[in-house]
Image (cartoon, rainbow, N blue to C red; front, top):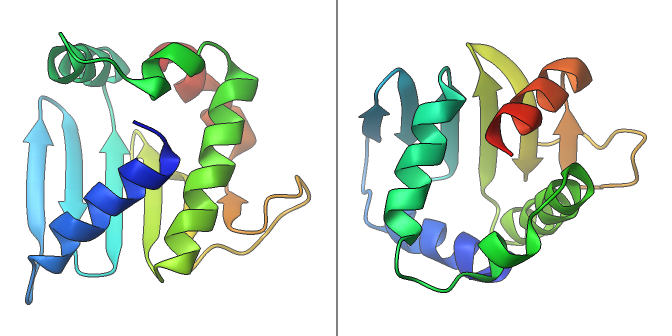
Length: 133
């Protein structure tokens, strides 16, 4: 699985939503999927990591092979932001209720050279990435 595949899966899921949104709760973590926007609020990174490992168990994944450090994650975030923008979709990642990253169509580019990624809180992003890796 790569960034393009991840965004395509997200778009397919979103296309099933005629109106309203789909809400998923995994422990203290919350995901809201609307027609053009996804909001992920991570409160317990450990639960997300455990959930992701369960989903990926027994599957080969380019993401699990290539994402080993924070620079790898930043590259993936840039790729996902670009693909989301092409699809006119937005992904907002929150950490413990605070906006951390906005990727895709509604992102306002910052100084990091990623046009479709807006980093709202660098410190919280680093805390989140450290907890997830």
